[in-house]
Length: 388
Ligand code: ADP
Ligand code: MG
Image 1 (tube, helix red, strand yellow):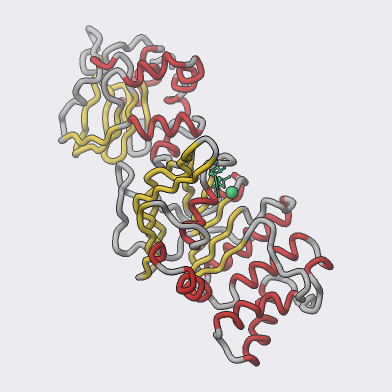
Image 2 (cartoon, rainbow, N blue to C red; image 1 turned 90 degrees about the horizontal axis):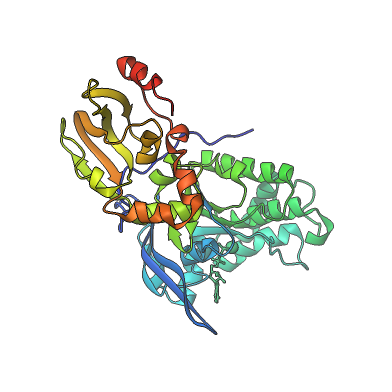
């Protein structure tokens, strides 16, 4: 089985509103509103997303969260209300319908949940069609190429079949072959396995992983966590907004709406080496997430003054609730060795949020148990004394 190697955690905090120039796809500050009977509905709210060449990115979110709307901005199936979409050096949001369809034919392969093969055409004809439409390849090459693509996706010998004569999985493989017809560098797939059993879904994943090995860039909307976990990176979307990936990976047990709340309410801060995180205790409750460098947690109780209890490294989170459970009411958090980048709640916001519903409080009590803490030597020993 193919597997996609490596994670490509973006090294920015907080979420950016532009991408670096080397991004293959840049969606910048995209807003998409739909008009409905009740008025205006915001399906995407200030979404900025950057995709780099060779990445296999999954897009995950609840039904109605905006996943299809997001990928439709890239394929040009739909247009942003405001914001820009750049792919390579083309600003696709600004292309006319006809220019977009010419551009798309050469540059994007699109795969849908319900395959959308033309029912009266054979699999071979379906795969050849995009080459006719784009005018790419000579007529002789088109057939040869379509046959080799059908072979690539495991459909050798089925080229004369109509879509209805083969299984759903085989139809999806043919749809992938069709998406590859003009050899586009980018593949966009909206729930490509949503209508397939899990074994067939694995085969589709393997096909995609093989295409990544060949240098393609793939964006895949999926509900299937076991597939998204094997992509280079996952974008989580909730109510039309992206969840900060740092927050999602540090607090994997939180629900999407809680992660989104934290995405809005965690502020990015920096601290020079040796300095103490300011203003924590005036908040009542707090949550902190380290993005770079290390913070040590100092117990300020009499007798143990400045005893380090634990260290938090990049990707670790800690909340006041974790420490209160151990009787540590006023810890101090100090940058060790180098400057530290972190995200932290401010003011009384977290306290208010914890009091909103019992669920918010109970899930945050588990932060430290879930977030993989980095501990060493004396620090670890001190920490073991705690009953968290
Ligand atoms: P997902 O793919 O995550 O299930 P969508 O992107 O399809 O979600 O839809 C996001 C939200 O936008 C939903 O509430 C949906 O009802 C709404 N929406 C999508 N397309 C339209 C449309 N053409 N007109 C009105 N509302 C739409
Ligand atoms: Mg959808």
